[in-house]
Length: 409
Image 1 (tube, one colour):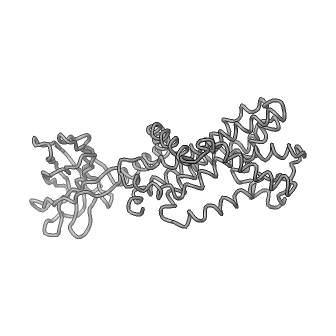
Image 2 (image 1 turned 90 degrees about the vertical axis):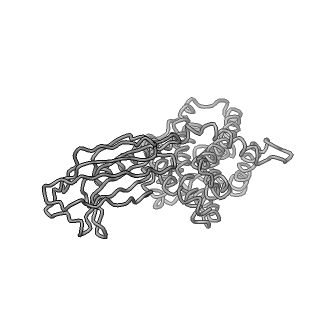
Image 3 (image 1 turned 135 degrees about the vertical axis):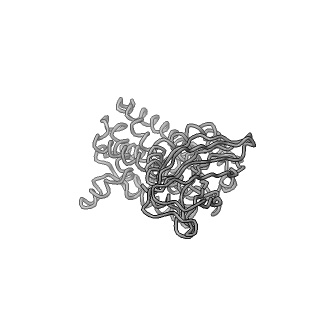
């Protein structure tokens, strides 16, 4: 430690927009602080949310040379920013054209202040170091990484509900079928795949080699794919499509990928209803193991949300991603045993391809809906961990890049 602060007094002046700070700074370094050599005190005002330097304040020169062990009186009167918000003020020793000593690990006086329309107030005064603040930021970031995604969804649940409804109904507005297309579209997609793989290519599943068995196994595998592929396919271009929202500072752009995920779940819900009807007609009942469905839907939603946040942010900077996503999803579809049995995969490739999270989802959907069995525990907990990690990482990636969106779109 090369400096000690004592007798700090910080207050807002009666005009409500200026701050007065006075303190004693004791020289604990081995050298004399000489004003002729550039030693002085100064202050920096930061935006604590972004770490942006707002004000590089004027210097307070030393009244005299300060030998090791001697104190120096420091006095500042400064204008606070007029824009409402939280601000963090660093009062630190410095040497002109050499360094700010708080950047070299020296302690400094830290003042947290809040500016409102009616004036300003001091929230906290303390001594700090750059390393200590770095640990605080890390801890805060770690905590926010787990809590902020949920808070964004919860706080904007009404907005999400409204935009999803508008999105789903708006796709078919003006068409003769109207909202009926929300049922027709997944049904036609499933019938197309069934015709190609079930009739033309004569694909069969070992659990039930009949044609109706193939239909049920195929549809069970399509259920998670419908929601994920629909959301992921639109994610790279969602911010570009809503660039007018992106440029509004008050609009929570994190909700746009959430809208895609919920809209995809709407499609899956309709497909799930059709599947349940087909299951009741062909097998007479829905197995009791279907109660495991929420245990699969939660990681599926987390996986889809994390992927959509990641792709949406990346799509702003890599415009080709919007053109590539169709090919990538097609590749992902055929690397997942949806329209063919797992036994068709080469034995050498199976250990690698089984790491695909959709592989585990498809297998689990078939187990609980067709085979009357619980999902494999080993695959399930790995799916939960991976999906949660992607959910948190995808949001962190989006949150990190969102400050640049308005400049790029």
